Amino acid sequence: MSDDAGLLDEVAAELLVLPPARFTAARNARAADVAGPVGRRIARLRKPTVAAWAVNLLVRDGQLGEAVELSRALHEAQDDLDAAELARLGRQRRQLVTALARRAGELAAAEGTPLSGAMVDAVQKTINAAVVDSTVAAAVLTGRLVAPVDLADLESDALGAAVAGSVPGVVPAAGPRDDLAARRARKAAERAVREAERARAEADRDLAGADKRLDSAREKADRANERVDALRADLKRAEADAAAAAAAVDAREGERALAVETARSAARALERAEAASDDGEGA
Image 1 (cartoon, helix red, strand yellow):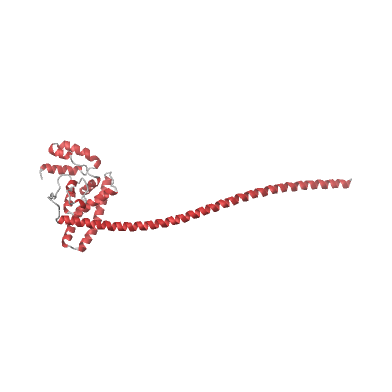
Image 2: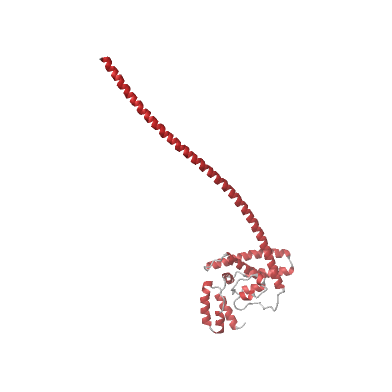
Protein backbone atom coordinates (compact mmCIF):
# COMPACT_ATOMS: atom_id res chain seq x y z
CA MET A 1 0.00 0.00 0.00
CA SER A 2 1.36 3.45 -0.91
CA ASP A 3 1.84 6.21 1.62
CA ASP A 4 -1.00 8.17 0.03
CA ALA A 5 -3.37 5.22 0.31
CA GLY A 6 -2.32 4.64 3.91
CA LEU A 7 -2.95 8.29 4.79
CA LEU A 8 -6.34 8.21 3.11
CA ASP A 9 -7.29 5.09 5.08
CA GLU A 10 -6.10 6.67 8.32
CA VAL A 11 -8.04 9.89 7.78
CA ALA A 12 -11.15 7.99 6.66
CA ALA A 13 -11.04 5.86 9.82
CA GLU A 14 -10.86 9.02 11.93
CA LEU A 15 -13.69 10.76 10.12
CA LEU A 16 -16.08 7.82 9.86
CA VAL A 17 -16.49 7.43 13.62
CA LEU A 18 -17.57 11.04 14.02
CA PRO A 19 -21.33 11.62 14.43
CA PRO A 20 -22.79 11.90 10.89
CA ALA A 21 -23.91 15.48 11.56
CA ARG A 22 -20.27 16.51 12.06
CA PHE A 23 -18.81 14.49 9.20
CA THR A 24 -19.04 16.93 6.29
CA ALA A 25 -17.46 19.90 8.07
CA ALA A 26 -14.70 17.72 9.54
CA ARG A 27 -14.02 16.08 6.16
CA ASN A 28 -13.73 19.41 4.37
CA ALA A 29 -11.42 20.80 7.03
CA ARG A 30 -9.21 17.70 6.90
CA ALA A 31 -9.09 17.79 3.10
CA ALA A 32 -7.95 21.41 3.24
CA ASP A 33 -5.24 20.53 5.78
CA VAL A 34 -3.84 17.64 3.73
CA ALA A 35 -4.27 19.26 0.28
CA GLY A 36 -2.77 17.70 -2.86
CA PRO A 37 -4.08 14.48 -4.45
CA VAL A 38 -4.83 12.88 -1.09
CA GLY A 39 -6.70 15.98 0.03
CA ARG A 40 -8.87 15.80 -3.06
CA ARG A 41 -9.59 12.15 -2.37
CA ILE A 42 -10.47 12.99 1.23
CA ALA A 43 -12.85 15.68 -0.03
CA ARG A 44 -14.67 13.01 -2.06
CA LEU A 45 -15.21 10.69 0.94
CA ARG A 46 -18.89 9.83 1.31
CA LYS A 47 -20.83 10.60 4.45
CA PRO A 48 -21.66 7.30 6.17
CA THR A 49 -25.19 6.12 6.72
CA VAL A 50 -26.16 6.03 10.38
CA ALA A 51 -26.11 2.21 10.38
CA ALA A 52 -22.60 2.09 8.85
CA TRP A 53 -21.42 4.70 11.35
CA ALA A 54 -22.79 2.61 14.24
CA VAL A 55 -20.82 -0.43 12.98
CA ASN A 56 -17.67 1.72 12.80
CA LEU A 57 -18.26 2.68 16.45
CA LEU A 58 -18.55 -1.01 17.27
CA VAL A 59 -15.22 -1.69 15.56
CA ARG A 60 -13.55 1.14 17.45
CA ASP A 61 -15.06 -0.24 20.65
CA GLY A 62 -13.29 -3.56 19.97
CA GLN A 63 -16.48 -5.65 20.02
CA LEU A 64 -16.07 -7.58 16.76
CA GLY A 65 -13.14 -9.84 17.70
CA GLU A 66 -15.42 -12.57 19.00
CA ALA A 67 -17.51 -12.35 15.85
CA VAL A 68 -14.43 -12.91 13.68
CA GLU A 69 -13.39 -15.94 15.77
CA LEU A 70 -16.88 -17.38 15.42
CA SER A 71 -16.65 -16.82 11.67
CA ARG A 72 -13.49 -18.88 11.46
CA ALA A 73 -15.04 -21.68 13.51
CA LEU A 74 -18.16 -21.59 11.31
CA HIS A 75 -16.07 -21.93 8.15
CA GLU A 76 -14.19 -24.90 9.62
CA ALA A 77 -17.46 -26.59 10.57
CA GLN A 78 -18.79 -26.02 7.05
CA ASP A 79 -15.66 -27.52 5.54
CA ASP A 80 -15.94 -30.54 7.83
CA LEU A 81 -19.70 -30.84 7.27
CA ASP A 82 -20.17 -31.13 11.06
CA ALA A 83 -23.95 -30.73 11.38
CA ALA A 84 -24.03 -30.65 15.18
CA GLU A 85 -21.28 -28.06 15.35
CA LEU A 86 -22.98 -26.02 12.62
CA ALA A 87 -26.22 -25.99 14.59
CA ARG A 88 -24.46 -24.91 17.78
CA LEU A 89 -22.47 -22.22 16.02
CA GLY A 90 -25.59 -21.01 14.22
CA ARG A 91 -27.32 -20.44 17.56
CA GLN A 92 -24.22 -18.76 18.95
CA ARG A 93 -23.96 -16.58 15.85
CA ARG A 94 -27.52 -15.33 16.17
CA GLN A 95 -27.04 -14.54 19.86
CA LEU A 96 -23.77 -12.78 19.15
CA VAL A 97 -25.18 -10.75 16.26
CA THR A 98 -28.10 -9.61 18.42
CA ALA A 99 -25.82 -8.67 21.30
CA LEU A 100 -23.39 -6.78 19.05
CA ALA A 101 -26.22 -4.90 17.33
CA ARG A 102 -27.56 -3.92 20.75
CA ARG A 103 -24.11 -2.68 21.74
CA ALA A 104 -23.85 -0.67 18.51
CA GLY A 105 -27.20 0.91 19.34
CA GLU A 106 -25.95 1.84 22.81
CA LEU A 107 -22.80 3.42 21.36
CA ALA A 108 -24.81 5.39 18.81
CA ALA A 109 -27.29 6.59 21.45
CA ALA A 110 -24.38 7.68 23.66
CA GLU A 111 -23.21 9.84 20.74
CA GLY A 112 -26.66 11.44 20.53
CA THR A 113 -28.01 9.48 17.53
CA PRO A 114 -30.34 6.61 18.56
CA LEU A 115 -30.92 3.92 15.94
CA SER A 116 -34.34 3.29 14.42
CA GLY A 117 -35.65 -0.24 13.90
CA ALA A 118 -34.59 -0.18 10.24
CA MET A 119 -31.10 0.97 11.21
CA VAL A 120 -30.75 -1.82 13.80
CA ASP A 121 -31.78 -4.32 11.12
CA ALA A 122 -29.07 -2.97 8.77
CA VAL A 123 -26.49 -3.20 11.57
CA GLN A 124 -27.49 -6.81 12.27
CA LYS A 125 -27.20 -7.73 8.59
CA THR A 126 -23.75 -6.17 8.41
CA ILE A 127 -22.50 -7.97 11.51
CA ASN A 128 -24.02 -11.24 10.31
CA ALA A 129 -22.31 -10.83 6.93
CA ALA A 130 -18.98 -10.24 8.70
CA VAL A 131 -19.48 -13.38 10.78
CA VAL A 132 -20.39 -15.52 7.78
CA ASP A 133 -17.81 -14.24 5.31
CA SER A 134 -14.17 -13.59 6.21
CA THR A 135 -13.75 -11.09 3.35
CA VAL A 136 -16.61 -9.04 4.72
CA ALA A 137 -15.10 -9.34 8.21
CA ALA A 138 -11.81 -7.87 6.98
CA ALA A 139 -13.65 -4.98 5.33
CA VAL A 140 -15.87 -4.28 8.31
CA LEU A 141 -12.95 -4.39 10.76
CA THR A 142 -11.31 -1.47 8.95
CA GLY A 143 -13.87 0.75 10.68
CA ARG A 144 -14.32 2.64 7.41
CA LEU A 145 -17.81 1.62 6.34
CA VAL A 146 -19.92 4.21 4.57
CA ALA A 147 -22.86 1.86 3.93
CA PRO A 148 -24.14 -1.33 5.58
CA VAL A 149 -23.40 -4.71 4.00
CA ASP A 150 -25.94 -7.39 3.12
CA LEU A 151 -25.09 -10.99 2.24
CA ALA A 152 -27.33 -10.73 -0.79
CA ASP A 153 -24.96 -8.15 -2.30
CA LEU A 154 -21.73 -10.08 -1.90
CA GLU A 155 -21.67 -11.23 -5.51
CA SER A 156 -21.54 -7.63 -6.78
CA ASP A 157 -19.14 -4.76 -6.11
CA ALA A 158 -21.28 -3.61 -3.16
CA LEU A 159 -18.56 -4.46 -0.64
CA GLY A 160 -16.01 -2.20 -2.33
CA ALA A 161 -18.57 0.59 -2.53
CA ALA A 162 -19.39 0.20 1.17
CA VAL A 163 -15.82 0.88 2.36
CA ALA A 164 -13.96 4.19 2.17
CA GLY A 165 -10.33 3.89 1.08
CA SER A 166 -8.68 0.55 0.42
CA VAL A 167 -10.62 -2.68 0.83
CA PRO A 168 -8.51 -5.48 2.34
CA GLY A 169 -8.72 -8.88 0.72
CA VAL A 170 -11.03 -7.82 -2.11
CA VAL A 171 -9.91 -8.59 -5.64
CA PRO A 172 -12.30 -7.44 -8.41
CA ALA A 173 -13.70 -10.46 -10.18
CA ALA A 174 -13.65 -10.68 -13.96
CA GLY A 175 -16.89 -12.61 -14.07
CA PRO A 176 -19.54 -14.19 -11.83
CA ARG A 177 -18.19 -15.62 -8.59
CA ASP A 178 -18.68 -19.31 -8.01
CA ASP A 179 -15.92 -20.02 -5.51
CA LEU A 180 -16.18 -21.40 -2.01
CA ALA A 181 -16.81 -18.00 -0.42
CA ALA A 182 -19.69 -17.31 -2.80
CA ARG A 183 -21.23 -20.74 -2.12
CA ARG A 184 -20.92 -20.10 1.60
CA ALA A 185 -22.55 -16.74 1.18
CA ARG A 186 -25.43 -18.27 -0.77
CA LYS A 187 -25.86 -20.97 1.88
CA ALA A 188 -25.82 -18.35 4.60
CA ALA A 189 -28.40 -16.32 2.69
CA GLU A 190 -30.57 -19.43 2.29
CA ARG A 191 -30.31 -20.09 6.02
CA ALA A 192 -31.24 -16.49 6.68
CA VAL A 193 -34.33 -16.93 4.48
CA ARG A 194 -35.30 -20.10 6.35
CA GLU A 195 -34.86 -18.34 9.66
CA ALA A 196 -36.93 -15.43 8.43
CA GLU A 197 -39.65 -17.84 7.26
CA ARG A 198 -39.70 -19.50 10.69
CA ALA A 199 -39.86 -16.09 12.34
CA ARG A 200 -42.71 -15.10 9.99
CA ALA A 201 -44.61 -18.30 10.85
CA GLU A 202 -44.18 -17.61 14.56
CA ALA A 203 -45.30 -14.02 14.04
CA ASP A 204 -48.38 -15.25 12.13
CA ARG A 205 -49.23 -17.60 15.01
CA ASP A 206 -48.77 -14.80 17.50
CA LEU A 207 -50.99 -12.55 15.36
CA ALA A 208 -53.70 -15.19 15.18
CA GLY A 209 -53.60 -15.56 18.96
CA ALA A 210 -53.73 -11.79 19.40
CA ASP A 211 -56.74 -11.59 17.04
CA LYS A 212 -58.53 -14.28 19.03
CA ARG A 213 -57.87 -12.52 22.31
CA LEU A 214 -58.98 -9.23 20.78
CA ASP A 215 -62.26 -10.78 19.58
CA SER A 216 -62.88 -12.18 23.07
CA ALA A 217 -62.15 -8.81 24.66
CA ARG A 218 -64.50 -7.08 22.22
CA GLU A 219 -67.30 -9.54 23.03
CA LYS A 220 -66.85 -8.89 26.75
CA ALA A 221 -66.84 -5.15 26.11
CA ASP A 222 -70.04 -5.44 24.04
CA ARG A 223 -71.77 -7.38 26.83
CA ALA A 224 -70.61 -4.86 29.40
CA ASN A 225 -71.87 -1.97 27.25
CA GLU A 226 -75.23 -3.71 26.81
CA ARG A 227 -75.48 -4.09 30.58
CA VAL A 228 -74.60 -0.44 31.05
CA ASP A 229 -77.32 0.56 28.56
CA ALA A 230 -79.85 -1.61 30.40
CA LEU A 231 -78.84 -0.16 33.76
CA ARG A 232 -79.12 3.35 32.34
CA ALA A 233 -82.65 2.57 31.11
CA ASP A 234 -83.54 1.17 34.56
CA LEU A 235 -82.08 4.29 36.16
CA LYS A 236 -84.19 6.55 33.94
CA ARG A 237 -87.32 4.58 34.86
CA ALA A 238 -86.40 4.69 38.54
CA GLU A 239 -85.76 8.43 38.33
CA ALA A 240 -89.16 8.90 36.65
CA ASP A 241 -90.83 6.79 39.37
CA ALA A 242 -89.02 8.79 42.06
CA ALA A 243 -90.14 12.08 40.47
CA ALA A 244 -93.76 10.83 40.32
CA ALA A 245 -93.59 9.67 43.93
CA ALA A 246 -92.19 13.02 45.00
CA ALA A 247 -95.04 14.78 43.17
CA ALA A 248 -97.54 12.50 44.93
CA VAL A 249 -95.97 13.32 48.28
CA ASP A 250 -96.27 17.03 47.50
CA ALA A 251 -99.94 16.55 46.57
CA ARG A 252 -100.69 14.51 49.72
CA GLU A 253 -98.91 17.12 51.85
CA GLY A 254 -101.13 19.82 50.26
CA GLU A 255 -104.23 17.73 50.97
CA ARG A 256 -103.15 17.24 54.57
CA ALA A 257 -102.47 20.93 55.06
CA LEU A 258 -105.96 21.70 53.72
CA ALA A 259 -107.45 19.03 55.98
CA VAL A 260 -105.61 20.43 58.99
CA GLU A 261 -106.94 23.91 58.24
CA THR A 262 -110.46 22.55 57.74
CA ALA A 263 -110.24 20.67 61.04
CA ARG A 264 -109.06 23.78 62.83
CA SER A 265 -111.92 25.82 61.34
CA ALA A 266 -114.39 23.15 62.39
CA ALA A 267 -112.96 23.13 65.92
CA ARG A 268 -113.28 26.88 66.16
CA ALA A 269 -116.85 26.72 64.86
CA LEU A 270 -117.64 24.05 67.44
CA GLU A 271 -116.22 26.17 70.19
CA ARG A 272 -118.33 29.13 69.09
CA ALA A 273 -121.43 26.96 68.88
CA GLU A 274 -120.88 25.54 72.35
CA ALA A 275 -120.25 28.99 73.74
CA ALA A 276 -123.49 30.27 72.18
CA SER A 277 -125.40 27.31 73.62
CA ASP A 278 -124.05 27.96 77.09
CA ASP A 279 -125.11 31.62 76.86
CA GLY A 280 -128.66 30.64 75.81
CA GLU A 281 -129.13 28.31 78.74
CA GLY A 282 -128.01 31.02 81.17
CA ALA A 283 -130.58 33.44 79.89
